[in-house]
Length: 329
Image (cartoon, rainbow, N blue to C red; front, side, top):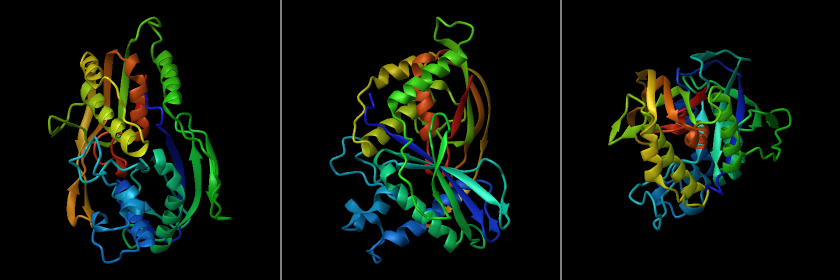
């Protein structure tokens, strides 16, 4: 059961040197700035248009992180051109669009599996993005600090600071065992009335636009089984491509049980937003639902999956920070 799964989280603090003009949803700008500088920093095949045409793609950090290929002998997603990326940018949730010199911007970074070993690239590249400039007007910033975060309890330890520009090796990552332990505690917290049963009410608070598909369509009503289907799909892919483990579990049985959990209340809305992809040279719609959904029923068996989904996000556009939710009792 996901024995090789590892998830690490980091907290980046940027300090504006010049005025930074950013959009309301900052995940796209952070990811875009990171991607362009990352490729320029590590790519040796300047004349090659795509990583798929590059002879060095199998050993290239950019190709693995940013254009994650599907191996020819892959047993899952073999018809896809790219696998799920092994990172998530968690943007600030406020709507600030201008940062004056001296003001700070904080965001989170989630790394999965062997991508954790690539953390120094993220630090070096985000430091370089600050020198090149970010957002409207290419405002410059300093990467002031990076902290490792224990993903489940939020404890932080500084691993990089601009003062000495040294990266400390500190592993606060968690795996399936820690996630199961945390979910059992969560179950006790939420099941105050009937401690002997797994029947209780739970709320998912969708913090960023969440784009979940069911039967080929983006859903506007977050039924519980749809949420579980999307978590299963994402976690199984991340485990296979980035943790070296094919997750063998009873997917059909899990989904069937999830259909018995009731959507007891829904307070969501669909929020549209677009970004321009320079790599694909087109505008992309990344809208999704935000708000709260309350679920009632036999929830205890699903708590580890739900906690895991909190960490890795769910649905489409997760690298931009989409699909970020928090559980509330």
